[in-house]
Amino acid sequence: MGRPPARYRETQAAVPDAVSRLSSPSPLTAASLSTAAPLTDGLLRGWLRCRRRAWLDRHGPSELRRWNAHRALALQDQLLRFQQVLREPPGRGLEACQRGAETVMGLRLRGRTAAGQPLEAHPPLLQRVQAPSDFGRHAYRPVLARLGRRTTREHRLLLTLWARLLAEHQRAPVPHALLLASNGSRLARERLTLTVALESQLDDSLARLEADLRRSQPPPLTNDRKKCTLCGWRLLCDQEAAREGHLSEVSGVGSKRRELLVQAGVHTLADLAGADPDHLARALEIHGDQHRDSVPQLVAQARVQARGQAERLLPGDGLPELHPAPGVLIYDIESDPDAADNFLHGFLILPRPANGLWPAAPSADASFPARYRPVLALVEHGEERLWRRLAALLARHADWPVLHYGETEKIQLLRLAERQGVSEAERAALQQRLVDVHLRLRRHWLLPVNSYGLKAVASWLGFRWSQTGVDGARCLLWWRLWRQWGGTRRPGAPPRGRQELARIFRYNHDDGLATWAVAHWMLSGAAPDAPDAPEDAPSAPEASGSATPTAEP
Image 1 (tube, helix red, strand yellow):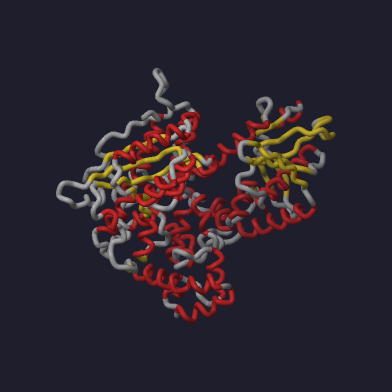
Image 2 (tube, one colour):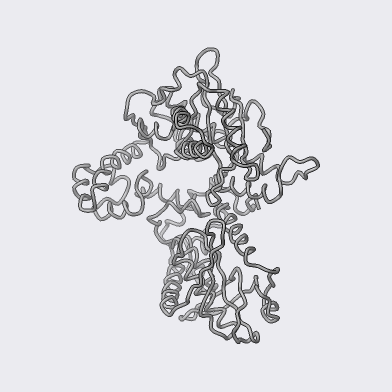
């Protein structure tokens, strides 16, 4: 589960050619566009999230679809919620329905749309209810484990589709469906009434999905590309967005802002780079002061991206705390946001060398004189024990600044200190030591990147994570697998899960190195012609010093 299937492994070299094929006048033949293949609940789910995604799922080059840990995490969460309502193991398939199993998995449902198009669906769970049907004195209703805080159109339409096909299959109506959601430590149950209005919305969506799948070219890129991180086609669409100069490529332009810019006649990155800031600000003023005031920054960002060169905003390197420091701690947290669990606090301990010069950013052929110290935070050990270990590490390097990238580490560390009764004065002193490299970078520089996240900035500088294609979601999946397999340091414990923990440490260690790569670039005068590199550009070196995979101090 932690390793992507071979068919989804990255083949980046083929992406530009694939983008070119998809952008050509007729990349697909009429035969390949035949919709004889059924519309599925998977295609509907993808289409409700992004029209382009459904088209790619049906017609796209499968060798370029990247395995994505988010789907595996979603399935894990779904299974966990289902287990909370199962009083006995679920039955499987039609036989289980006929004998009246309390819950059923693995039933394939088939039917047709109003236009006669074949339909196929695989509801994840069915629950028995008291009502007559072809199965006897009982019938079934579909169950969905909801992720997120609210019930969305996607949830409603998927349940409506499953209910419709199930009603045809059991020859009994399905007036309600069941939604399961996490509500803190409790499981919330929501009964969804399947109305005529939902049936009408489903018919409309299926017709539009069928029409999109008949297109010779994929639908345009979605305006809201933040969710593209959850999609296996991200690499392909990123290449397309860069090729056409999509406005979403400009850092700071989201779906709403792009819509307003298009209304003002600005359609591409090049248009925005060439716009007159005063004129554009007046055009957006009717939509609110925040949109008007954002224009100078957006135009400046677009111009930097169009030129491909960084631009200094303020003098100085932005990191004065490092000038007199005898060393620096580089801090990065790995977390499970749904469980509010910051499970790993990783530190790179970097002393200043005897010559007084900070070591260069790491490269593929050089070691790095920093020791890596991972501090695992197991829930069963409690926060008091975690804080003692963190406080001891910080105290051993009391006059060293603590670098981190983004606000998460600062917020979480100070909240932990407050919960442990640390005095206001001590928390203020700790806060003074925390240096947000991301914040300082944004104050001092505009970079030719479409995001100021650590991945994008460090990659532009030529840094490469040592594990290809790994991100926070993959790291979280490894963590859950390690916990599931009981990975702790016990005498005679099986080795299962140790590899996952080692991968987590490697990823966290690389995040620390990437943070230092950005900080060192700022310290070194930050030449504005830093290389534009792909997301995985030269490898991070091995840490000098040991990183013991253990939860013990």
